[in-house]
Picture 1 (cartoon, rainbow, N blue to C red):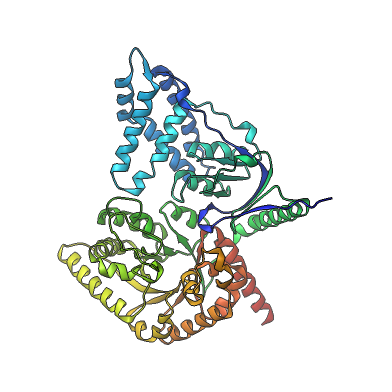
Picture 2: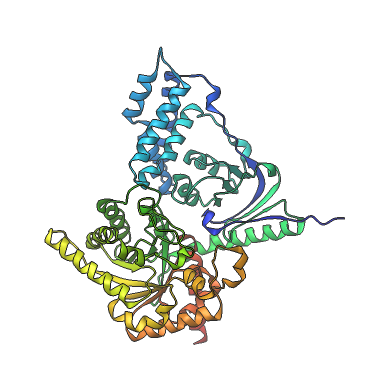
Length: 533
């Protein structure tokens, strides 16, 4: 009998918006085309709005649901009750009926208004508007036959996730989406594995699918041997996950397990998972995908929220790290053959000090509200830090002259460029802490793009060379009493924790999901030491 070959799709880890494993029959959601109707009754829309509003009220009042679900439902209710929306619909109605074309035009007009703000946080509400208009028209969409399935859709809306979560779907796969949409946040809140940016999987409908939204893999129609193996992986993962949640609450004397986050909505998730602060707050989400840079006030409010939420714990906010593969529409960067070796991180900020100063003003103002640390990306030479300190001093003086309140803060650098390994002694007198970004560091040490499968074997963040570099950094940092953290993927690998702690790393910053796992590993290590005396 011919042995069946598994069809395996390797997925970039950046396409995973909610981690976990799922196994089930693949089902495809095919949206009803609202253009099949010619008119919609204004009265029917109002009745649908009333029904949806009552459903949202139930969700908002249900304190057993994750806080993120209730918050997002509150946003939907506010959108649903917006007088601007209903004035538009009433104006468009003739004899109580609205042409579908006019209905869609109103939807698109509201979306254009959101997009024109240039604010990514407001722009993310586009999906909510689409969801609202679709729900008003198709509020009776049924998903009952998707129970226990792996579900593929071109895109998911927030209301989809709430409905699908009640059916125990095993995983979500979609062509569109991002880490910051309400749908992605809800998937994380309900802990449903979710992978985005996939090609159309309709041809596999009905086949068994294994979704590995931890390592980045989808296996279609696995053979019996693989199927049994996947079931064991899920069973082990489920048992461990249930058991280890309690470890998230542990606090250790000599080491902190902090969270890596990328959007404000992850602040609450990190706190719920037991983070001892935020070890890496990437600020790129504020800057990319818009026509203009974010204002000082916009940034200040986001940073302030993170700092206040975690007070008195430390919140490490990284200065904008673009260049390389991350572009800004409003800041053209001349194309180079090797963009990762070009103008990025602090190199770019020092060339465009108007962006740097606005971010620093927002950060320094936010420092008045708690325990802020500022992290500098892509430091290569001591001169980078010295020049930055001059800008910081200038910014402080400006704010104080304006009567603005600022607090104390710490300044640290990312160690990701090899030159810093030998220059740390010269940089140390100017900084308060060191954070080792093992992802980029490994990439630069082994000259291998971590996203290029053709050179994947060269990218080895657990190689002895990387641990020797970490040992060198921690030894040198100790001479200046600088704490050392690791915020790359290596910090989230349970088998690496022991080595990192032995080398003197005092803070590990990992995805919120990994926090209980890493704390459990630290607990086991400390218990073993205690019993061995």
